[in-house]
Image 1 (cartoon, rainbow, N blue to C red):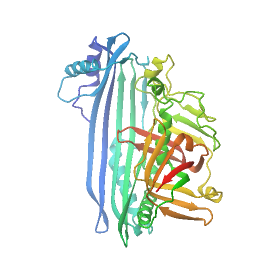
Image 2 (image 1 turned 30 degrees about the horizontal axis):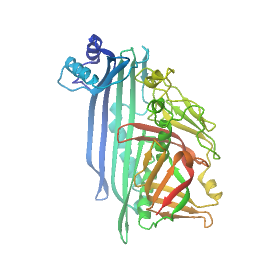
Image 3 (image 1 turned 180 degrees about the horizontal axis):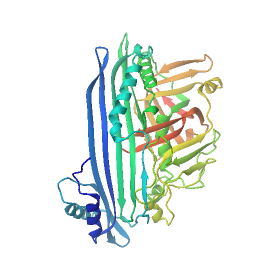
Image 4 (image 1 turned 135 degrees about the vertical axis):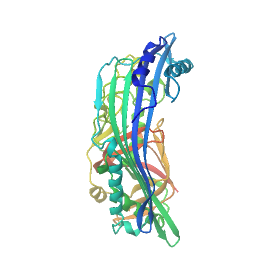
Amino acid sequence: MSSLFPSLDQIKSTLMDSDQVLWWRVFDSRSRRSEAYLLKNEGRIEADQNREVSEQQVEVELAVSLGDESQGRVRKALAIGVDIETQVQQMIQLAMLSEEKSWSLMDNGKSYEKQTKAFTSQQTGEVLQGIIHRLEQALEDPAVQQGLFNSAEVFCEHKQVRVLNSAGLMSYEEKARIYFETCFAYRHDQGEDEFMLTEWAENPDQIDILGLCRRSVEGAKQLGQAGLPVSGSYSVLLTSDVLIELFNDLRSQMSLKNRYEKIPYLAPKTELVAGFEGTPFEFYLDPEQDGSFGQKAVTSDGVEQRVTALVKGNQVVESISPVQYATYFGQPPSSSMGCMRIDAECRPMEQVLEDLDRPLLEILQFSGLFTNPMDLTFSSEIRLARIYDPDLKQWRYVKGGNLSGRFIENLKGVQFVGPNKMQNTRLYSDAELSYFGPQAAILSGVSVSS
């Protein structure tokens, strides 16, 4: 893809020539994306939108000295059609308007390269068509045909990211991203309900298209006959799409950033869960986990990433120490990126149900999950769930009512349900999260009010 931006050598030369810039980083991202929005027309899938998009963004981050061991710092996307010298001078002026305690990059002059095995930039369209074909096959499934296909959205993206910094670092990485969304409706006597499901993945084999379609149909069907749950305290089964957010909030409290900003911080040797009596688990940051969005060789400030244990034996064992905050506390920096990996003994769902002595509430979909990283609380209205009655040995569907809890307390008697699952997601901020671990966890003492 040809570039309208200055070359990396031009940007680097301009930054090195400035006697006002303390240190700098340059990020050059180039992506190619194939995307389609699909509807059903006269019994066949039809592309309402189908397009190829190529994009490039170049960002520069720089720091300037403000004296008294403080610096100003700014990160900004470069504009097309404005010379690089002018843009760097504008960024210097902006940096002088901010202030933080001084820190610098790691002295790392190495080169790194990490390629994805999922697909190349020339294969995004091929991968997209393969997913559409699998969707067409899923629509022939008898269980899926009980519902009404509403729509689906697919995009396949290949991204190349080059990073240079003033300490000599040069890194190149490739990323493959797939997003799949499907929505089915079910017609009842009272009307029609829809149930949409989404999935993020690095490669197409991670997406169970038939399973998603079946679940979408079943969800739409059960919405029309579900009743309100009874208020009370429940054992609640949460799946990996929820656990990824809860463990991310927990991870945030283990960062030195929290200690510096004087907000809740879990220091090494801190007991994680008071009175823990659940299934033991270990919590890792794993930058090497296959199939995850968290694969990373090195950070832009020069820290090589490695598998890092955060929690073992119900105790925090290491802080997440990015260069900036490690510098402030006089500590060596540590890995700060990677897939959240939970190692724990899992039980199959069938065995869990056999051993139940009280009802189990399984969340199938929240209306909108809210989590608070400051106090680790979470809450949402229940869009659809089901309750298993161990005496009757059967499920009953419910919807409505509000669920709330505090993750660190509800983990006290945690049980994990297998097998393991790779869960990826991209947040509204474009930040990416990855989780690999039990496909579900049963938390105790979760409040439901109707």
